Length: 497
Image 1 (cartoon, rainbow, N blue to C red):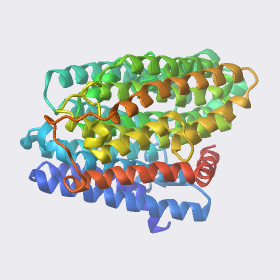
Image 2: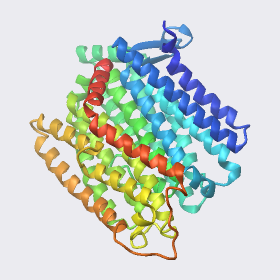
Image 3: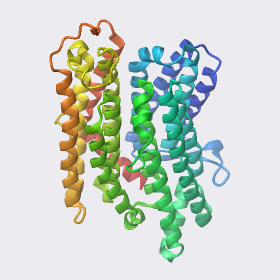
Image 4: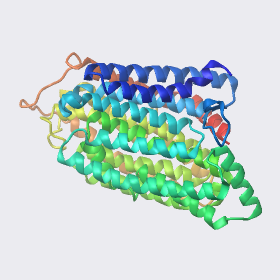
């Protein structure tokens, strides 16, 4: 076995142990350790991705070199390594861009705790990406939930505590349904390793046994992960959780946490249930309908909002709907479009949350639209970042959002029954996106002098400006270099199967 094949295990363990070490470090040392660990894990993920692209094959790493059922397994392919690298990039930039605000939003005595939670969040995301064991996935789903809840409520005001409680209730409901589904799978197959379960499920389908229990199990798992990833109509916890947490937390929650659950669902579809069995079930029709509803109702809720951060949060409901619509199409190109949209939405939504906080800073701290008038002139980098993020969400060419919408349109065209509703809702959603994002862009660039509010230049906030530039570059790169990325996703899904 090549030494590089140990990198997924090293990444998970390193992230977990850094959280333990951070508990006895002062805040500044914990922050530097956190940044170093994310950078090292990102570097290992990049090296692993290059290695796997060279071999063209995935591999399985046995923990302790013990086979099932005593041992646990990690599985790595190009899609897993690419997703791990992308998660590290988004997390590092989100923490970098929101560091200055964190100083004022969170008590200094709790800064070490913040980085402990971030380390645990990273380890859980990496475990969800790499694990080949369903029960291990469930354990890290719970670690992910606890970490995310802590990142929401660490700001310690009434709204964040209420948001954290609401998030925990909905998230535990989703976790419970997921656990029941895993228990039913174990009862039917006698296995917890994904590859072994897939073989047993194929035999069950071939012999015509347990048909109804298997469909119920698939439904429980899909609904459980849909609740945790805020698919409409299970999104009630999302606006407050994203809207009132710290800016770094909002950027990470919207870009990473929900995507970790969706990636786990993707693995279950391919590596546990089997893509053909999943597409034959009627569950995909439910996901398709809920996805379409989320695309419309999430955007309508965003239009009604008068708070810029809650508007961006409701936009996430619509974007999650896009991903589940792709799942609901039940085609390979639909799955490719959904995975690509995970990347596009993560890069864009973090940019929007970071830009929004810059705009509110130069509007006397107000998040309402009227005081935001002219904010793009008072904070030029925040204005540029918000404009780029908005154009991407609307689907303008050269940005990542355009490629997402194009892939979804192509996926709909390849389906006989779902083509018309998919294309109609895609068009309606794009118009609604343009309404609430473009009206905000126009608002921040309407000239209005606010002598009572400060003006921020690049010289005042160099790190923040650098973060905005990097996010813009990432967005443009996803849009301009989409074909290699789509090819990588396609190869990764083929390795899944």
